[in-house]
Length: 133
Ligand code: TYD
Image (cartoon, rainbow, N blue to C red; front, side):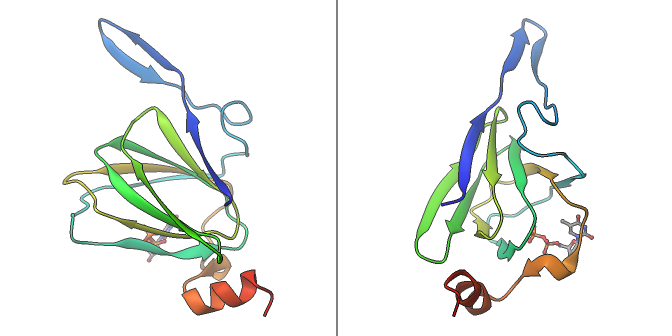
């Protein structure tokens, strides 16, 4: 499975907490794009696609949601629910997001610019490509 959880350092004191993200240091790729997802709802699912080239780190900076990760052979579910933990997802992994808490906010760091052509949005096509059928 081409994913891992990355624990970020928290700089905290009586004023609050701060997490710093630095390309090439605690992030294993050059950051080309940042986007964020908000106004999520518990009964809405997102994702349901893979990326041929893109690598990402996703951080639940507020709230929680569940990720389903699938490499074409097996499926794993993990909860993202801490602002100091990033979920790294490598190339060619199917992902689904669900069970968003109200107001969950996800910040996403991406290794490439947005390119719809490198999405695989059909699960059967994804499985075929993964299994070289
Ligand atoms: P999509 O990738 O389907 O979102 P999710 O993975 O959360 O389900 O993107 C939703 C819409 O936003 C779609 O029309 C494409 C557009 N979009 C951009 O224009 N730029 C971006 O960087 C991203 C991630 C999406």
